Amino acid sequence: MKSCLLCDKEFKRSEDFRELILLKTKEEWICKECKEKFEAISDVHCPKCFKDKEEKECKDCKYWSKKGNKVQHEALYRYNEAMKEYFKRYKFEGDRLLGTIFANDIKKAMKKYKSYTIVPTPISHEKKQERGFNQVSTILDFAEIKYNSLFQKEDTLAQSKKTREERLKTSQHFQLKGEISEKQKYLIIDDIYTTGKTIELMKRLLIEKGVKEIKTFSIAR
Image 1: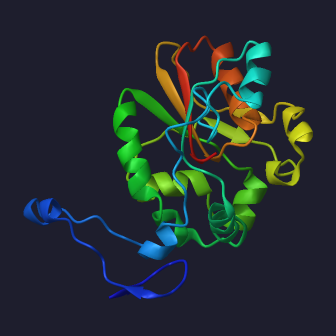
Image 2: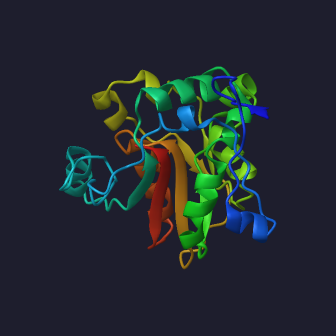
């Protein structure tokens, strides 16, 4: 028996017959009840950014389209109350072990991006000192996904504390710190996609270096 990382209830892991035959076991960190509270993005979603229940291009993507920005984003889950509480504990209360919860989901999702350089969204030095870890790269570490930390971020007001309008007006606060190949394909990974502003700021720096193929990904949308 083990205890759920979210509710502390003891549970027994389920074992798939195929996993037993191949001697491969997928570690489970939360109970079935807690896992079911996270809502996967449905088949009906914005074709560009995966916003759930949007059959056509959503308002945010229309905004970026008018600016000439091409949105190619994928997300796994809706940003519902369960996800909000998860990130509150993981990011803002610094419970690093919670990064294991979505590691298997990320590992599975990354299989189709094998030809891409994986780039996690950075946090500022000040935020790293305060929190102790980068929430995106920590999940990638738990998922055993190789990545390249190409960006660094200045210390600014957190996007979570801004209104939608304030987020869209955010000026550039990222810098490139690594070598860029214009022939390489890049996948930028963030934890939460809200308006897309954070990701578009990073994409802009890559585009200025001549990169043609850039896609983005997040756990929640």
